[in-house]
Image (tube, rainbow, N blue to C red):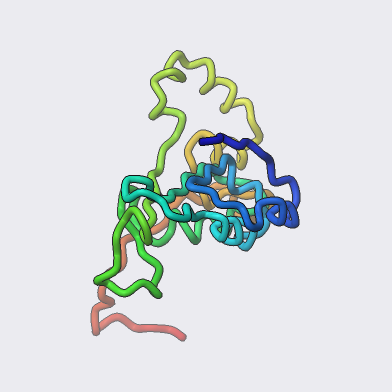
Amino acid sequence: ANIWLSALERHEDWRRFQGHNLCALAFDELSNWEYEKTYLIMWGSLRVAGRPPFMTPWVASTWNPGGPGMSWCAKRFAHPAPSGTIMYDGSVAPEKRLPHITGRIAFFGTFRDNPELSDGQYEQTLDALPENIRKQHKDGRLDAFEGQEFNEFDPALHVIKPFRIPGDWQIFR
């Protein structure tokens, strides 16, 4: 077996992997990729011809809020389901849904989940960042970005759980 480490600096770099027979893909800082298409095309090299049953192809990815690909990363990983939920694409028939082949799962975490960063020093570094970047990197906020009109917006304070509007309330449209 070989371990091949390589960077994709531009969308077109996926062509270097075309035709390869890879059993695993690992991506770091996926939100730095502008196009989801780059990520999906790479899956075309994820196969193991004549593989033994114990060798299941897999993909692992990390990403942080921010970057040119934050929107597609959030749509693919963060918004569809709560952290730790196995998700399936709609094209996969229910009887063929095997988590290790067709599903994906996303876990939310912040620096606070890493005991190696608990000494307070990294938190001070994050606190020194510009406000929106701090919200992204420190708190994992997907609703903080440059050029935002209302920087004070916080879903924990300004969003309520959905509820049925009582029939006697006047509705303005």
